Image (cartoon, rainbow, N blue to C red; front, side, top):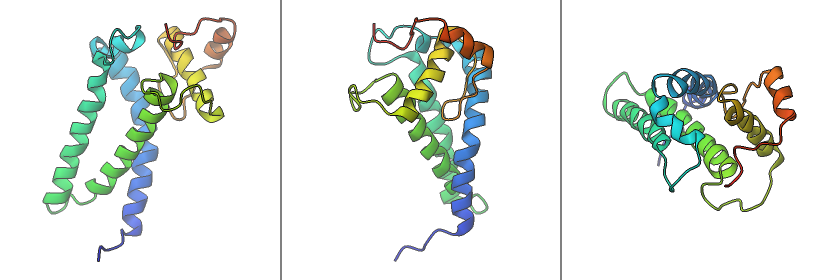
Length: 162
């Protein structure tokens, strides 16, 4: 019989999931639109194939989380990395579902089906693509008022399929 996870482990999963939004926004702002822009730039252009250079980011992030799992499962004193890794992985799955599957329609799971909450996130992401600036977060994007106002006056949609 498998033991039940402790309350502390569940708290770590939830906290890791929540903390990932500001970590993701900071990484997006200062890495993907900074030193790592050479990979991320592909995401702000029309995709020529099924994959883009930006797809290396989730591979890199998953590799780091897997190193945490390796340590957490195998070395004394590192067990808390397992629930943290689960929370990070759950956030990554939610991010991929919203960003890649729903907003960018990279797989055909949603067809033309609309989900109001996801459409609000898509609107914020459209602003990011319009101006290559804020918002950098995905699940709780903070859109500066002046950008939201500016975007409301344009019909251009960089997320539309070309």
